[in-house]
Every structure is written in structure tokens, then in C-alpha cells.
Image (tube, rainbow, N blue to C red; front, top):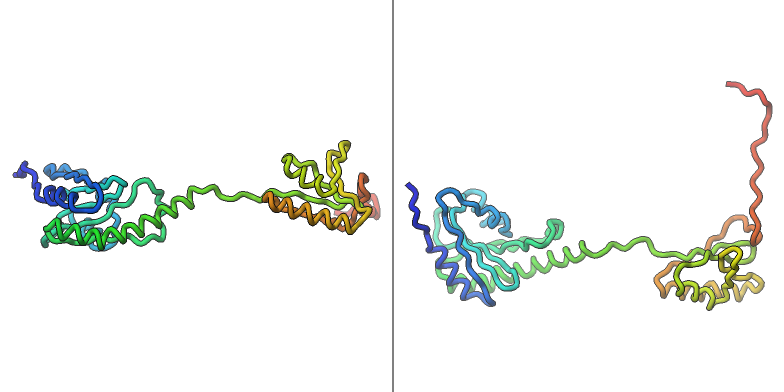
Length: 252
């Protein structure tokens, strides 16, 4: 028959241990409920792929303890779950990071400590916690990178040859418009475009270069299109001739 009296030796050990660790920690004991235990939420968060994980895979956790620091750091405390003495201590993974953030991060594997909370606190402070800090820093950095907005396609200003002139569609942004007008582009209302005259090719080239540098400072790429055939400004290129027709009667 199951003994209804809970085994609090682990709970007592965890409570004393919490007072010996650096920082402000609380201890929560999760007792054996006579086979109706639901400690999966805790064991699933154990951040270990070594001895502690192996022990949890082979044995049922009847009771355990959870230590939590004010900054959210958590430790899992359990019996050796087999033949042995002392306790198993493992860090618990942060619950607010996406699973993808853990990819490539080495687990801060747990340790086995003697049933002496004072020496256990020293082992945790100088062995387990430093490895936990490295791992959790990597996870946080990964999570921040995943949450950052992905860069879209860079904004562009397209300058197109039209005869000897260069034409730019009217921009939406006022700072882009100023970059054009400051460097000799003139607005043509009837076509809703900016035109850079080609009367002085040296001046035209200098204006394109200066406008491009200013647009680059605004985070905008400049594209200069050179069509094979340069139609005169304001004209429409002639359509290529259609295919010749040999006969109205065609074979199948």
C-alpha cells in the first residue's frame, strides 16, 4: 500500500540549496502523489542531453523540486532515479524562446551532486551555471535574430534613356524628388516625369553621378537603363515588321 506521507528530504535539500545560490531563489517541491504524478511539464524543460536526460528516460520521476531565480533562471532537482546517492541538478530551458532558437546550441548538461546543499551550491555556481549562461545567451541571440524583420527588396530609382535625355518617373518621396532637382533634373508636368537634358553630356554624367550618390545616402539604389534602341524623347519606337506571308493556303 502506498505511503501517503510525502518524502520531503529532497524538498528540504532544495530549500536549503536555494538559499546558498547567488541571487534571490525560490524553491518549489513537487511531491509524489501516489502514481498520479504530472511532472512532465518540468521534465520536458530539462536542458540536458547527457546523464540527466538518460536517467529521466529510464526512470519515472515520482517527485522533484524546481528552483527559480528572480531573472527567470530555473533548475531542476531530482533523486538519482536509480541506485546511487545525492541528487541530479539540471538547468531548465527558457520557455519563452521559439524552438528554432535552440538549433545549434550546446545543452548545458546537468550534474550529480552530493546530498550536501553547501557543496552542491558551489558546484552549481562554478560548473553548471556558467555553461547555462553561455547557452542561454546563444538562444536569446538566435531568438532576436529570428524576430528581426527580414530585409525586403531595396528601393530603386530607375533612370531611363530617352533619346539623349534621361527620364525618371515622379517619385513618391519628397527627399528623392529633392535629390533629383538638386542635380539638374527638371519636372515635366504633362508626362509626370523628371528629365535630365543631354545638351551637355559632361554635365549630364556629373548630375547622374551626384544624384546617385545622394540617393545611396538615402538607402536607395540607382538603376540606369540603356535600351538597345534609344527612342527620341516623347516618341514611341516603331514596331518591328511582321512576318512575311507566303500564301493564303497553309498545309496541315
